Image (cartoon, rainbow, N blue to C red):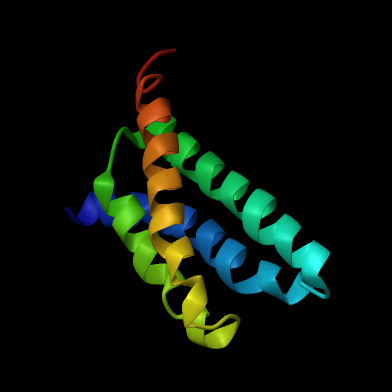
Length: 106
């Protein structure tokens, strides 16, 4: 289990940047929509995909991303944005599943 956690850390770091730093670029409604609905989900999908290709399927990555997003509700958003936490977890699961299909193929 310890190795899986160690393997997840770089990917969780990327998600932390995605969830905590990108919202600072939301200067208006258009930018917020672009970031929340396009850029952040795309990064989450790519993180799940890359993790799946390199390490296989891991449901804990999605769970950790879900928990990582929760504090942003109080920092950047309000409680109406809670729906994004499970949405990003599902997107990461999707990417992780797709990446798993290519795991170990060289």
